[in-house]
Each structure stands twice: as C-alpha cells, then as structure tokens.
Image (cartoon, rainbow, N blue to C red; front, side):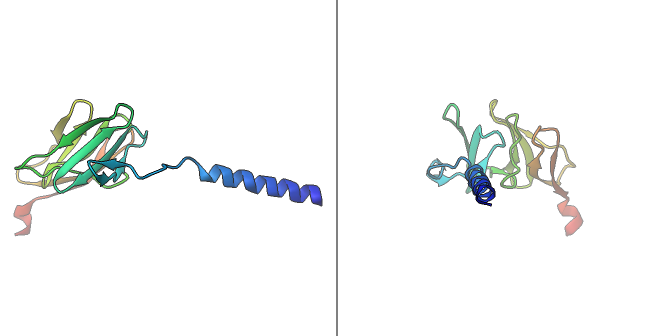
Length: 141
C-alpha cells in the first residue's frame, strides 16, 4: 500500500511539474504597450493600438511599425492573427482587409468587390487561408 501511494504521489508531482511549463518572467512590451499578439511559433509579438501596428521579431529584436496619419492599421483577432510562416492578417484602413508579409513589410489587400468593407480576422497557421467578412455599404442603406 505504501508503495502504491508513493507511486501515486510521484505521478502527481510529475504532472504538476509538466503543467507548470515555461512562463514569461515579466510581461512583454512593444513601444510601452503590453503585447497583445504572438505568432504560433513564438517568433513575433505585436500590439495593435490606436490605428498603429507594432511587431517585434523576438529572435532579432527588430521592430516594424505600421502607422500613417491617413490610414488605420490593425491586426485581426487576438490569438489568430499570425501564421507560422511570417504572415499576419489585419487591415491597412478601416474595412480594407489585408495580409502582411512581416519580413518584407508589405501589406497585400484581400480581393473583394469595389466599395465593399473587408475585415480579416484570422489566418490558418500554415497561411493557406484567411477568414473574415465582407459587407457592401450599398446594401445597408
């Protein structure tokens, strides 16, 4: 009986140790804002704040900023905005869904009808597809 209890206790301690896993020692910040996004591979962290997007490559510490006086940049849903191959989804302007190639620093607009508002919310981990919605303001008013 003592042997069985010892095995059970050792098993529980091992499970507890595995469940603890690695943790950040302190919150990650990007330009004084707490990071809201992380890529699945942990290579990028990002903030989408007040019409600007800031992305840091954690491996190189290189920061990319997307901001304009005439545009509103944003990222998609927290937890789903990044793929594992260096792509992110969001928008270059309100209702202008786009895919961002992080290394190239280039936004590519998603296809859609002229005048439609396109929102990109998530990208597949392998970058193979984007989900979101498209509405045409002409249909609502």
